[in-house]
Image (tube, rainbow, N blue to C red; front, side, top):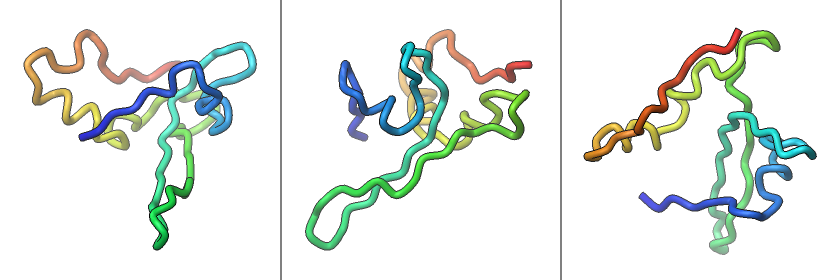
Length: 84
């Protein structure tokens, strides 16, 4: 699995997972590769059930966490939680 970082680019802001002040929100983005080999943004979504329930379901939508669970150090101290 190849993991990439957005680093100091505007990627997170452009896809709506970071606001102008740098506050981040969980977002799942899907990309496809077209017939010419170009990578295209397919969609981005926030895993919210409602405006007052944050983060619900992000753990199930992001396979990276499942992959990290199988490694020696796992995901560390991070576990999905509901924000009320």
